[in-house]
Length: 334
Image (cartoon, rainbow, N blue to C red; front, top):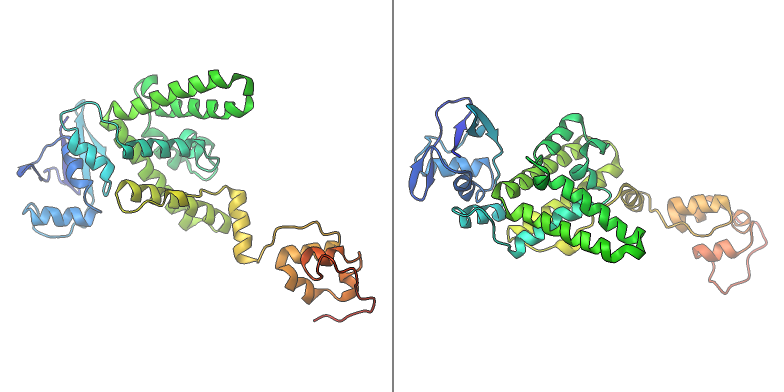
């Protein structure tokens, strides 16, 4: 299938240099072998300028990658800065199937982790059920992964995978059967990626759209807790991309947060939130959870502090655990 690159609304395709030859039509692998090694549109413009294809080193108009299908020109996504895709575009030019490499295996595990995590699962498996997505965003995420038949439907395979993983805890007496099912589906998921370069490319496009949506949601939301949650999701993508691009390996630091975990982090960062203790005095409990021991000292006098005995004072550290003496005289606020 022939692909072509256009600048803006021009009907004249822009050439690329493929194996030292200027070509205006090329395969998707030939295109990706060049462009996936460039960081962004600006670098592509400079590449075209350096090769003598365009007269200026910058391009202000949009770039459009297209291919012809049933007499129609269909638009394709341009993917920059992805060494995993560039590797397979370069090494599998004349091959249908992709070899299994450690980087591809890690990418598959990463996609499976998105399918399993409470925060990220709906983005991949059921966009229409994710509250943080608009109708347009749902369509963008869902449309790219539709297969031509059941065997190519990665979303269905990942849904099954999640179902059986959850079943390992729910049905302890059937773990052997469930394990065999998981193993079978795992092989089908791997086959999905190794059987077709375009399948791998589709998933990387899905990740690109997912990242763009998260960035937009992060910018538009006024919910500080959601900002923390979206940031944790974006951090996962950045870490995985850095790993497969050979920049760094920080996979051990990935921590995608649920809304509840993000909420706890928000309070820790903004309100000196302290984990609730078993405090009997309701006023002390509220103050301590809001501002810690300093808030108790500032807003409670001694009679209030010791109104329920000295156990609360011990619990928050006003008294050492073995100190059974507490004042009887009324104190003053500090």
